[in-house]
Length: 523
Ligand code: CTP
Ligand code: MG
Image 1 (spheres, rainbow, N blue to C red):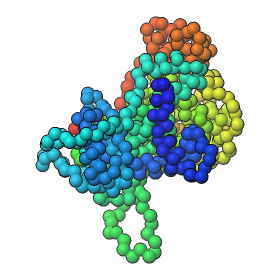
Image 2 (cartoon, rainbow, N blue to C red):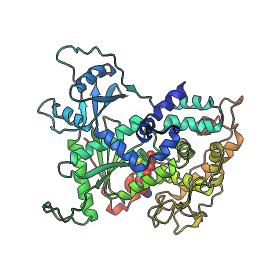
Image 3 (cartoon, protein in one colour):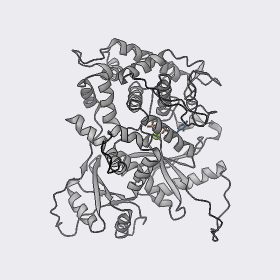
């Protein structure tokens, strides 16, 4: 029952796309997986952007305020749906989606500020105050409730109750993948930034990229947003052109100053944005902040369209075979459980690099095509029928014997390519071939990756891979192992020794110390 509920939950959006994509005359209804693979990255992003343009986020006293809020909103537009969630300690929010973006316009026009002591900005983030006189609303209405991410214990129980290792991998994927509400909140957060800048830059788009949109996101993943110009060059018939200041042709100092200004806008003006940090010396300068109303960590960057193309590429590869996303999700989860990845930036492997490792492995096994010189797909996927479980165990076997010391991983080469430099781990950036996406990974961390891959390969040979008498088996046993080992309870798993103690690293250590200047501003 729980699985069905979660399945419905995660496929809600696909159902909607399915409805809007399938022609009325179609007699055979395609499965959700088929439909999802038919929706391109651009279509998905556009549908989500439009949804965000039709939506506002409203803080309410409790879920019980929803009928009243719905009635109020219906006076100014037509409500299509309401999605409730809560954040600790006991804060309640509703995403209200209207039928038309004009209705959002109406709602914002009739909304006001609590008093003159606040910065009077308009944004789609609102709160619903108690009525002067008791509410008349008698409607019996429940907003769409959203299932919280499961606890580790719940997840273990569900996985141990599965039928097979493949089933476990699918359960993990369904309950931890970024859901409909998660996507809505991320696009709405991007919309807030876009609207804030719209007066000066009506044609600048704030586009989510990375795991929020590439199909490999989890419920708690960060939001990477990029600001990109969306201006058309005027035709010769266009006689009036804007007076404008000369651009400094995208010089790095100018980008850094602009980012700093954007950081100030977020920190001083945008409701919900807090803990603003400026990381301006990175290869791609970013502004980091936490959005208090959505609970999402955000990284804002400028003009980084390669990252959007990368997201499109990963999305396309993720939808080209139903085994890709569950496999990537499970490997990412495993890496987190054994402590290979860490949300803080540092000398360890990132989820993005891990994803590329999985994709390369799937190419080697004919599940995915190779990429062409410009990142396009040059060969259709082979019809390899290996099941998900075999691909999962095969992943660890493959990399347990991979010679990371001599070879690089490249999504456009069938064979391992010799490493072009001495980086301990070399994963060729599929869109900018001269770059190594795992340049940050140290020798120690590469060694730890190798040892953990071998440990996992060995563990998967030692534990039962089917439900039987063992309490914990398959994926559940693999994910539990490091925790059980820490308590001295696992005979199969010996955590690798670290030659230097693992520590959280300040992000500035990644860059040239002499030039680093990271300003930390908190509210
Ligand atoms: N990216 C890139 N080159 C890199 C690092 C990142 O092109 N060397 C792009 C990728 O599109 C990546 C995105 O930036 O997906 C965001 O990076 P990051 O937040 O590190 O990875 P995510 O894929 O978003 O994964 P996570 O869930 O850990 O945030
Ligand atoms: Mg990210």
